[in-house]
Image (cartoon, rainbow, N blue to C red; front, side, top):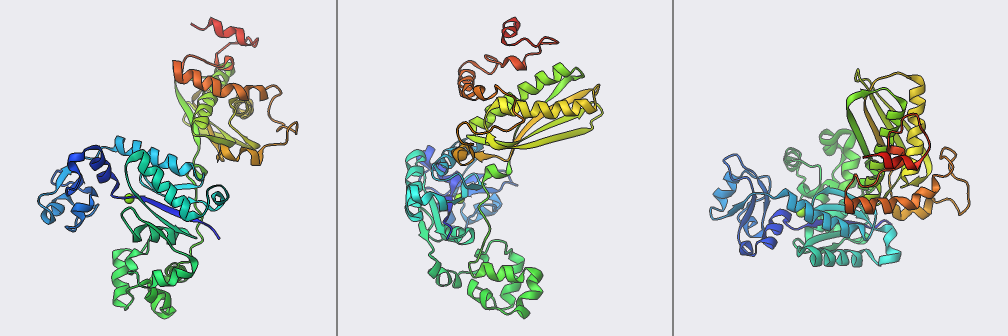
Length: 410
Ligand SMILES: [Mg+2]
């Protein structure tokens, strides 16, 4: 049985404003555009009582609550708080699927051995969010995403709601059908006309009633209304790639110049990878010629790495192979992408046993650079990006004699 959490901050933007500006607490507050065409981005609980909700035109909101206070959104600040909230999630599981700045699914199935029952994890997440941001979150706990999301909404604000497997029908059957994600106002109206108002009605409706409405999705909709949902939590890092690319002031043709640029890009991508606490299992090199024809060359490898030397070794091979096909091409853009990302915490799962074989494409001697990377990152953070460069990223021209050349750089 999976353990899924849906965490949703309460009236997020409005709560941040009320936290940062105590004089706004307890007041009907709208975060949004105040112009004639403005829209409500968030509504405090005090103003929701008047029937104001997000996505409503501000004009309409003010008709419902004329004394509401409107403040403009401060997205930078919300992003900052969001990062604090997501950092809490990361302390319990790497499987975090962000839905927005203030909302995420967490798969904590594998976290139970370390952190206890899902409900305790949910309580601890709420506590840590409150301690670090001063804000409340509502958490739903269940064995799938559908139920977790429904649960988080049942006890808002500051809620913690668990739906156990044997409670599913009891909890769902009475809920209005609008609560089912994916049912728009139009469909809800048609369901209503067919006498279907609740999850229970939908679960028990016959194919003859549902087929005209949902066609081949009929069974899926009935499953959802029954609380059945096998969708996995797809962590943000599972979809993304970390990359660095550069469009040059002038087209590059010399192999040495291209390799030097490649080394700088591999280094930049590596810094970003480590900054995010990730490992990469695939390297992509992107090459755009002066005539805008674009090529990508990729290679996967095991075990995944966070080591710039390894990334560069693979990227070099890919670029060299491309250059062998197109020796005198003029290149206007070069990029290095890292994908098949996984959190660093899983390193041990993939790591080869000590003294075991290393991937064949990695040149001998690159292993020792792994321990150097975090040190270089620290120095750069302290003294700026230009403070340290790998000798391999300096354009040494035809010479290949090592690290001392770095001193010639002004
Ligand atoms: Mg929210």
